[in-house]
Image (cartoon, rainbow over all chains, first blue to last red; front, side, top):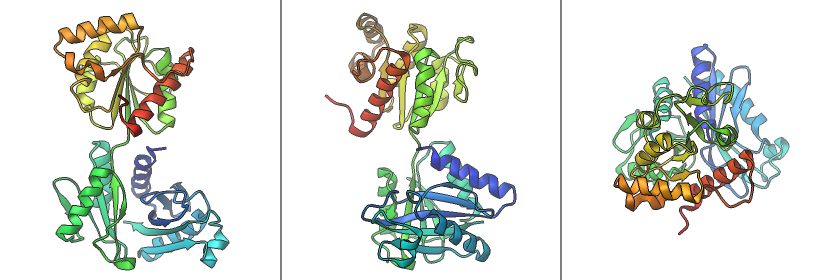
Length: 107
Length: 235
């Protein structure tokens, strides 16, 4: 839904107000047949709850894992997934695309 | 993302203002750019500011081409107001249209000052206004991301809404009613000095799908709103 973004940022605010750690993942570049465009967001809390999406579902698991590291370290990460990438193949980006995802802590 | 950045994004969304967040991918430093202001710790070059403002206007998000790639790359995320559908008349078709439009990503408000019509029982989960349409429209504001449909069949409700919408930048205006009803409506709007703008009103409202039930008419209306949003007005 188009209103995703609004509810996503409201969710982030609520998590932070409840004292939970949170991270925000953003698709920053895509090549080929990536299912979600640049700017797509996924927000994750410390328990691994998430809203939004950065792919058709194939890399969400890996992004949520990275989000946990980002929350722990307080440092952002730039992730890249693609069919040529062994890890991406394992997490199942079989749609033939390549995608770069930025994951940042929400302070 | 700093708390101030998060707060400003939420504020801009609530006020339906467009905003671009520029992030340096190496360290996450950010700044927020709108048409007038730049806020935040990340300093941008004049070329980068121009590029960010171009994205603000187009509503697209992208890496800035004037920055280096990889960790030094700058990503600009445009946040633009979500499309909004204002429905005048809490009638049967509105009951079908409101949830469909919400599912398609529209922020929906149903406006009807008649107490028996705009009730939570008839519109569960839908934002309702029991003010007169002109009051609500003046309060909400009519912008480029807004569509207005007049469904009440009552000139006391539909006309004031159309009189405000016609000179506004809303991207779609539709009004329910037979050819005869619409002719009379056009006469009234011409008398109100809006003759040159009445061509903006879609009537008969909706794409010609042939359906007759309230839900089928709602599909036709929503389809036309989406078509005009992406394809523009067909002449």
